[in-house]
Image 1 (cartoon, rainbow, N blue to C red):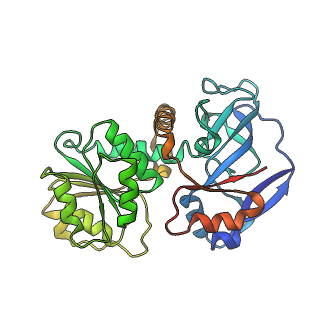
Image 2 (image 1 turned 90 degrees about the vertical axis):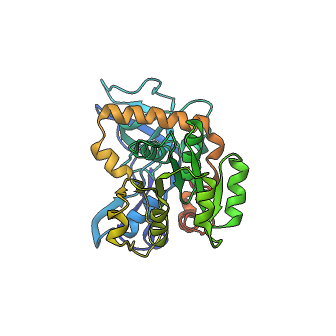
Image 3 (image 1 turned 180 degrees about the vertical axis):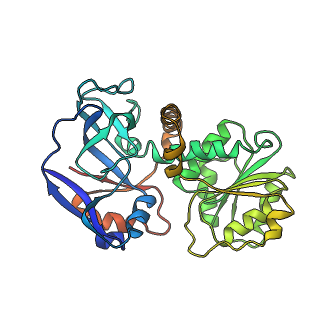
Length: 335
């Protein structure tokens, strides 16, 4: 049997997600790879998609976009990436049925897992590192970045934020990190002692950011939050600055007067992996997957795991995944 996670309507994920049983997949056809899943992560984006699902579905809707596992079979005459072979460890993104014991994946989405990476890291090897690759590419659109221009990053203690910090530090890009609390700031300093970090719970935090940049222009800002924080980040940017929004943690809308953008010639742009999937060529996706793997290898200590559950603990795992202050990703072992 194959156990997989589905929903039939939108709502609170802990309430509407369920585990169903069905026959195991048949042998893979041309262009497919059959994978026995060993672990998958619960990403916030997975849960947002469930919550936003419109109405009810006539058939169970699969959930999850990323998983790691072992190759059981490869379809006839199917081209695969180097080192993807029967018995080999792989990670897959994007997936139509990620939260499942067995996966029939498009061969183009299957990426080999280096021996140096544990299953816990491999389960997170693509989505967050690919987001870091995407954000770096967005930042590089500003000509000052990497020279005199600095990057300011909100929610820097998140899984993506830590990877961005590592990547930018490796490439000698000036960076100031922003987190919510002094506690979070202290934790991030332990991980990256050479990168300044400022807590927004302190009055005057914006001035602290400017001071940390040493008088150099804040050219680019990364914002996965939205709302009031976006407005504050826009105020920090130098003329000609670029703000990239890649999340919507805040519930309140962004309220910005036209003059803020007009007279400072600021650019506000949204970026997400869904758009990357639609716009990137097959060559770009393959290249970015290699870059994501290299990020996972270089910064494997940054892939924290908050907890690991089995499928029978699905509701508890989902509740843990949205718990405020959680550090790391919640994983599920489906067997």
